Image (cartoon, rainbow, N blue to C red; front, top):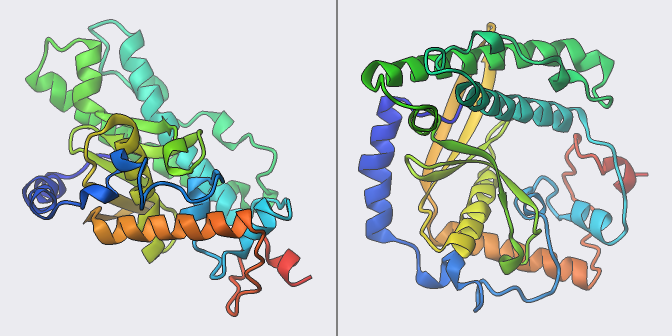
Length: 303
């Protein structure tokens, strides 16, 4: 899921990265300048990154209900499915790394013991019975996709680097950190953020979305890039959104690569400032004219 085709890699390295170096982002909008405007938070309110980037509610009343009113709702089916599928991908990458580190040099590339997904991926009690079988099928298809792709990557590395040790093999075949834990406090965000993945070989922030593409999805990657810059003080210029789909029993992928430029950074900061003000001053933004039917807070807004 996180590994690019040769054509995609060439596009990132030969097109997007040079473009980002040439155009660049204004220094005021780099995460390492978190201590001064416009990145300096106006209010002392810590927000989750998904609250800023998840513009599914047009008026952002979901944030008001959750943070000001203390309303608690159950996750809807799309949220449950997305959580399980995200966990499937992360679990596979971690299991593959674990298998390489725990086996002898003669069997480092053997992933046969993890050919099937573990049952614990579908053991959550909040998975409705009516979607369990469909979700289990998607988990199996997704796991099988990752299994064959990663196994091929490992064999390719071992074919050219037969003396690679386990640490070198992981770095060459699986150069990605999944569920990267980040502290976003410098930017007025939660201290316990979790990015889907950071690819060291490209380098870029990657986020997976199960569902149709939306323009505000780019805010998620932009936010993580700003946080990474605020912590490690090196530039993150390229983002990638991955949209997996399922068709005829196999995975279909769409990837959206883009430069994390000034416009996206400014948009993220404006959204953060607006929501911090909403929470700090307890402003009810009112009902949305086109309230999404799948919104978990719909019953609360239209009681």
